[in-house]
Image 1 (cartoon, rainbow, N blue to C red):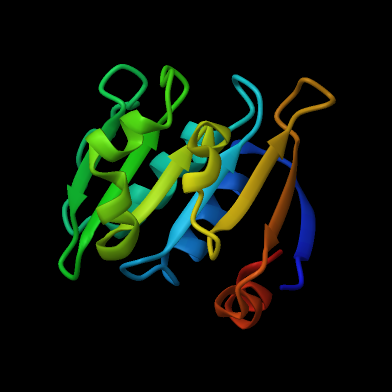
Image 2 (image 1 turned 120 degrees about the vertical axis):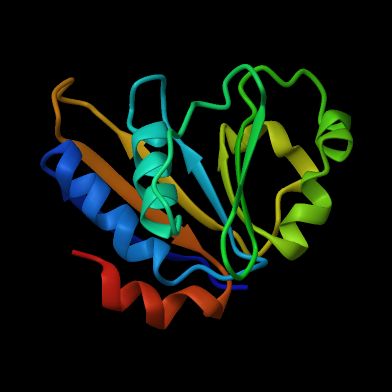
Length: 157
C-alpha cells in the first residue's frame, strides 16, 4: 500500500476547529481517525469540534482522559472518542470494545501509539505539532486507504 501525506498550517484554534468540522462531514461508520501529538498539541480541541459538529443537539464534550472512552449517539451510528494515554497494555483495547467499534462506529483515537498491532490499517492519521508554542499548529495527515484521498482534497485548506 502506498502512504499518502498532506500537511497544512493551522493559524488558530478556530482554524483547527473549522478543519475538524469539515472532516467530520465526511466520516461514516467504520472510519477511524488517529490523533497524535504531544500534550497540549490540539488533539482534544480537534476531537471536540468534530464531535460537536456531528451531534444533533449540542452537549458538553468531556475529555475521555479518565474514562478512556466517551460515546455519542449520532442519527446514523455511534461516535467513539478514546484517549489511550493511560492504557498500559494493548489487551485493554479489546476490553474497552474498541475493536468492535472500529467496524461499527466513527472512532477518534488520541494517543494511537498505544494500539500497537491493533491499529486499523485503513485509518486516517492526523499529527499535531506546536513547534512555536503558540496557537499555530503544523497538521500532518497520512493514510494508505484510497477511501481518504478524494474526500481529503475537498476539505484540506
